Image (cartoon, rainbow over all chains, first blue to last red):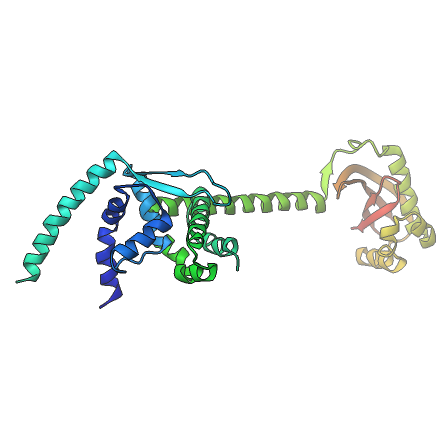
Length: 111
Length: 215
């Protein structure tokens, strides 16, 4: 399949998936990349050049907030992202929309 | 290649504000460090992440338009600053290398009577063909230029047969600044039997001849 279509389809759900991964606990960039890859069965292998702009956009929209951890010992400070109340609400609404869309898509595709 | 060098290669190609670029740099280094802490060697981390230029391009495709606009504004500001510095340098060069006329006596280095007297002496040396004396009265840097041949050629261009010198006419004084130093400029009209000429003579503060025109 053409890479362009794959990228296009994945792009539409990335915001939702990132919010979902942040819903339970705060995470840093690489952690999100790793979990997206592992939990999606390697369907979502993101690079930093895609993930970071998503995080910046979500933060600008007030759906997540970030903070740098205090460095411990030799460990560098890490930038953690945490979902906000607005982010939780948005995740709920996007999740509902996703369910409706996937039902509608399934109906069309199974005709 | 160190992580620092690798990350620098990425961020220098990312088109965004300086603040965002620094944020990306710090975050990339922190995330690479986190991956390394999990036992992944640095070279494997870099292979997973890809070529720096490809990562930068991915950032450029995904960062919001606002970041790109700020980057372009920054570039325009930088270009404007470079142009401003170049213009300032050009203005200084023009000031430094082009003579600027000022009112006679403004530097305090020249007395009108002394300059007039020296100008008359120089013209007398030219009239009598006393080029040795003229060389002695000439600024060291101008001695190689204001030779007997050059002065005689200048005289020939004004007229082939001047005749005997008769008298001095009107005289004008000015000063000019060139490369930070002052010169006195004297314009002397002089009448000869067959011609009237105007000498323009330049003197340094030691009243040595530094330039010479006849018309």
